Image 1 (cartoon, helix red, strand yellow):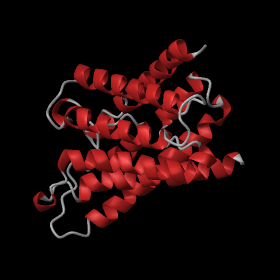
Image 2 (cartoon, helix red, strand yellow):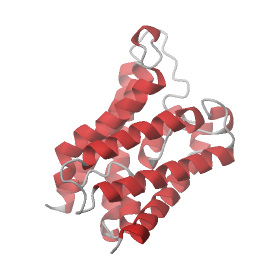
Image 3 (cartoon, helix red, strand yellow):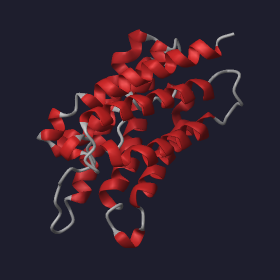
Length: 229
């Protein structure tokens, strides 16, 4: 499969991740009668990964996340030369989804953009967690995410079950960390929302690139240290 086609698959996949996950947060989570809340948004993110992994996993590997792509390079599962194509495609797909969410949301009378579904710390944290807490949370959550991705996609793991394990992991990560940072573990997802939320969310975006990438590298390296025969 050509790199262009694989990159296009990543664009579509990341579009779905952000549309499903952030879309549920922006459009549905705040409606009391739906009862979606943090739990529903967590499952929405997990479901996007499960569904898209079965759709494009055999095409692009279904990374949907620059930190995942970088972590897989660190783990020896992906070529560093292909990183720019994947990362550009992921950010473009996420941004396109954010634009769609904004277009839909702004069609409601009296709509206020607020924080959109952006990530933040301090005053921008859903429950006002400080910078150090947000940084540690994002590093650890992404490290565990990559550790599980590496294990679930290992050739020794049960075939065909990786999408479920990875999707459930992302849902659980959101259940833990939405109150802290609104959950990133994905620089493309964070960038797409910050572009619309603007202001201080742009200023804090650095953390949601640095911490997930650092965590991803740690997770992949630790997996290889204990898993290699």
